[in-house]
Length: 248
Image (cartoon, rainbow, N blue to C red):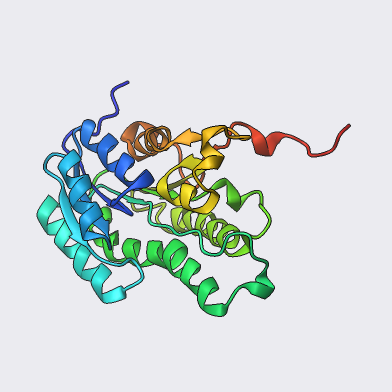
């Protein structure tokens, strides 16, 4: 399938590893010029080595001033911006009820997963509005729709991110900027392994996706051929959320 992405420019957050790195590689393979944003300079250097012509920009998505500067640098280096993919995210407390969750832990999850996307997109909007057939893809989670015990901050933040994308798509409906989401179930990434442990992935009791599979969803949604998809997205969960938990 010809995705009509050749020669376009994209900014990918959370690009130092995991899904962000896979998205950057997939976009590069389609002929997209990519700016890579993350707080890890070491991880960005590794990703940049895999993405010819990419522009690494070190910034923390929770830092308003740093984000503004990073987006300006990315737009200037790329000569414009057609797509922003927000992959930056953290799990926060795993296996803890809210009574054992501090306010600082709760706020940290929302700062990265929700406010980070807000800050990046607010800075990127002038460039996106100036580009033809611009797109935004937010990497959320199936935890926006279903919940696992002990992950209330993460679940709430991803649900907020999905609704933020829906609301933003309405705001930008007349600006030729589409906003979509990808909401995967468990993906084999360093973050997931840190949460669940390597042993959980050796003989998993649940279906597991690769970061490259999520990147394929992102690349499609970012492309002009997905022009009718707006304010919604892809729930990539092997159909788990469609199943009833009742025995009948």
